[in-house]
Image 1 (cartoon, rainbow, N blue to C red):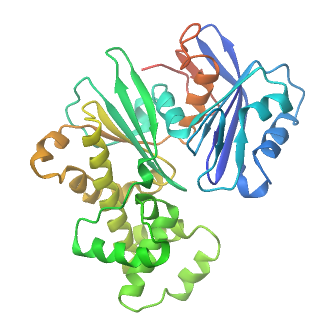
Image 2 (image 1 turned 90 degrees about the vertical axis):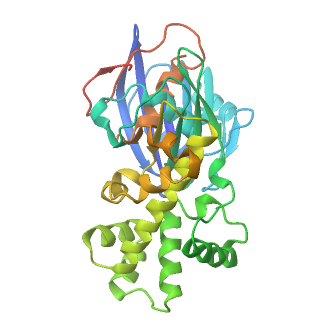
Image 3 (image 1 turned 30 degrees about the vertical axis):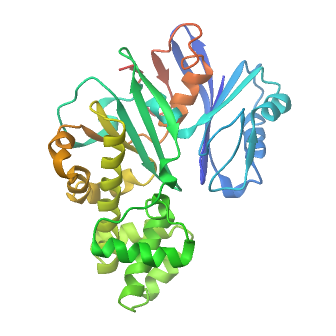
Length: 345
């Protein structure tokens, strides 16, 4: 089975074999999307590295809404078609699912030490939620059917950004001049962190220092801002990261309320593990709870950061094996490189 996690910046692929209720990765690969013209070239490069047997099925978590086995990535101009992949690589069954749905399926295969607890809370059986800032902002609801959580994709990251303070109102006004419509993704993403920094420097009419401008030219401005902030080297970077964490917590709280996530709110994506210090600083949880009469309710919701960067790959592999489709036996264990095997939680 072939599994993939196709994001706006990176693609993870893995070949898996099934042994009873266990999946084991026989090969894995990570690819920078900018190094390839499209996803077909990445898949071809991965599969051509050595002789392999027939691929029975494939599943790909895609950072995009999926309609009828076809999608266009929101933050990358790639069109992905399940039928085209199956025909080109002679795969009998190919399915595309939203990347946060894949992450949600994969969470059940993680170890306890692959989560960082931001709020212990007091979980109650019921729905859960997943929010993930990275190249874009993804959101997912996990509905409790009495036995298991069933993930449902959403495009909540593109809902209107709702400021909660005078400073955030100014941020919205600044971003309207650039984007017109301002979604949460314009604030809670890699580019969003840079947008916040640019707003703060423009607000006090002070351009970025030369060392930062050089860092921005490297192409990963968000990492530059976050690193400068956590090292205490730049006040604007520090304020940008604190504001980012505050807005992130506020929208996480919104999502938890919308689906009554009594079982927990999970924070995924590539940004959170890199800014754990900022998330633990208090602004995230304060904003998460700051919902008026529902502050007490949100104080009881467990909040955890997902630390394992291939969680969506695990979920896509389980989906390829029929786990999510309801056919055959459920997968209880997935083995990938660099991790001790774990049973499904």
